[in-house]
Length: 485
Ligand SMILES: O=C(COP(=O)(O)O)[C@H](O)[C@H](O)COP(=O)(O)O
Ligand SMILES: [Mg+2]
Image (tube, rainbow, N blue to C red; front, side):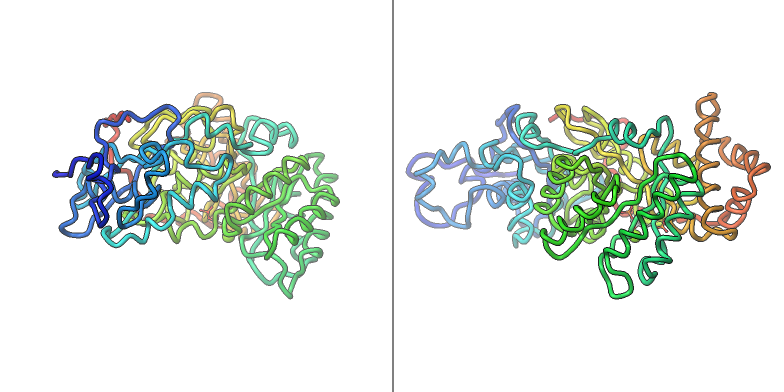
């Protein structure tokens, strides 16, 4: 690889176009500072474009540069403000692709603003012509930056305390059909699911306030269902009331109404945008409300390996922005999810410190500086027959949501919920007794089904359902690899 050395003195400020590496955006000797933000990009340069020059260009375009030399750089502390590409590695088994490590000075970013961060890191640079494709794979945030965010308003520990539920994953269901039910019918589905044994039900991503069910009707019937299910079971129940709307004013109005009705939790969609998410997070913190985030839309830019943003980066941004729940994949369900890559997302949500773990796509040590943990949500095409795999792969601090896998039960919604509750309880018990649930799971479920008709019917109905398709977003490193920053 041939890269031009940085130009010095007057030569650096000669008018005209100069290679980004010469302008100082490539600094192979640079040691990232503990306070730097670091980004790892997968770059696919156009044919004939040198990888180091491409990395320098990404550093330039995502920080201070434009396409030509500007003398006004000299009015600034340009050396400090320039992002520095400091390392470029070929991607294993992927000719034409490179991992470029870029360090950014902390002062380039407004404290506590994902909007500001993303305007640099995934701003203009993604349309830059010398690159065929660009993907943001991972980021490392210094503690100094993490501390400028409030993080999740509730966190896993306090959520469990408020719900009085410990030692097992929480269970939920997305109400189906997604669209079309009236408020009264919708509330009935919520009641049946909660009464049957679920902890939560949830609005789907696209339920807001449509002609067939206005939001106030939905909130009223859902909270009536929650209250009746709580009275009937003696347990605390919740339903994620989706407050997603066209404006912040509408969202605040809906959130206030949810609070007035006694809801423990509200929901937003990722598509409302980073600023709106941070605003709702602050509202939840002020109002003792759990905040559920549905990630609908992320697949448009997270799924392809060569272009876009990895979901692990979105998960990091959302932990900073401050959500309590985030959909993070199921591995075994209907939607994209390589096992190791998905476990990496769960680590980002739940751990207090993420060490480098290349086979899970974690390229950096990340200290979360005591920010609350985010409860990952496993949802999308899962059913009771997979309970051993879900518990084994995803662990206990998560919500498992069975929409079709509750409401599609042949004996009805309550039976569907009971099947899931019995399946998780028998699996947790088996795990706690030291059994090898990954291998003995089907037998454990079959044994439990002998005295639980709903579980028996669920296992029978969905026994052949699997989604065995190749994942598109897979790890680049085999389990033995190690890395350093
Ligand atoms: O409606 C569902 C699941 O319904 P069902 O349980 O009937 O499949 C959710 O929108 C998906 O879980 C989103 O996917 P992800 O969680 O991956 O973002
Ligand atoms: Mg959905």
